[in-house]
Image (cartoon, rainbow, N blue to C red; front, side, top):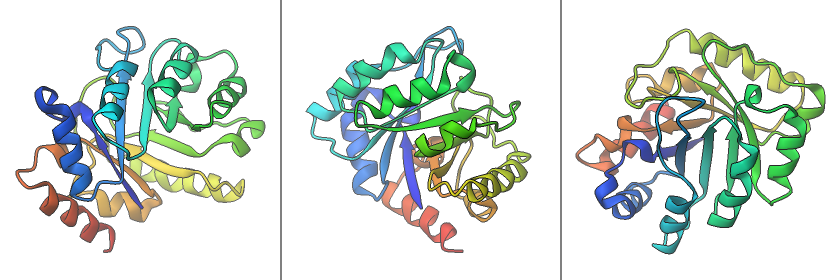
Length: 218
């Protein structure tokens, strides 16, 4: 089970140091929420920030969640910047399979993201291409929202779908994940947890990661 630190909640005035601190505390990966002001209203980070973190010495996997209107335009720049995983929303592209292939063609892992108001629907041809399937447990576009509890049933249903299709993809959950609910989320079937304010708002990152791990162990 992996904990991915969402930098949307980090201290951007000291981003590299803050990211290194949560990784040293035990977070597994770094999560980028990329917003373009079109698919969602806000603007956030782009490939230059990813490249800067790599130059600062961050070596952990970086997973990039594209909340953008044209994700295909961001694949090459993020690959060049050092990203390891790219996920996107299927409704934002005309050919989901081709976009997944484009990501994997740059030696990155690929995945799909489904909003709270969308059912998980994956074309049969796409299942073998998926390394990660992410469920949004908040409305995309803003940090610090509360977890939508109805997502728990969706996680369980999606886990059944992964088993049905013999998929080894990670089942990720993004939004409102914290110490108080991560055990429920894991019990429902998730194994990849994007944590923003539930991690970066802590005074002691080591203690907070330990608390999250202890909850995952039950």
